[in-house]
Length: 198
Image 1 (cartoon, rainbow, N blue to C red):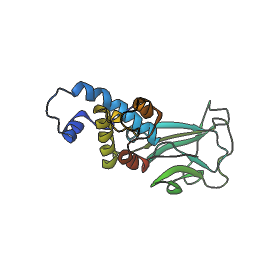
Image 2 (image 1 turned 60 degrees about the vertical axis):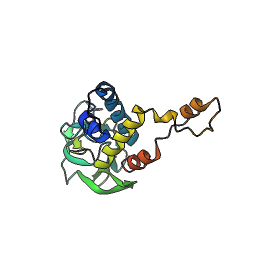
Image 3 (image 1 turned 120 degrees about the horizontal axis):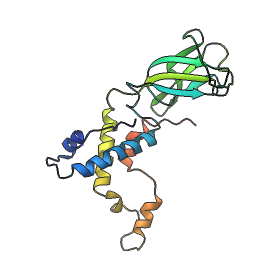
């Protein structure tokens, strides 16, 4: 599905661009930068606000950690004894409960998961199916700012200017390619929304 995290008009307003001369370039970069941010943060932010996300788990733990957050609603939690061929719906507050607040905190974001009320989730290959919706109606403003700064960074090709190598050396380009860091001011914002499941 891959929804963009900003629009061309939002970016042009931010960048002070009044003409349509750069629309094609910006239109090409927006989905790529949006995907980069989603990959970095391990969440999509907006893709599953109005569309169901379906995830499968093998159990063997007391929690099922959902990949998208914050969770808006859970449509169903199913259990299968035939490797996912058929699922029987489990009952909320009897078999499971959604914990939005207190599972595990990483950076400033809480990971949302499902907790079995008594004995956890017994191991079963493809034994659990969760259908839910999660994300933000609107991309958080600080994330939007980071995305627009990142788009500007790529548009202006700043990566070739801000090399850590001394001027006059022959391997300035090679030095940039060997680094995988985002610009510090962008990384600071995205790290607050990054979900790390380790």
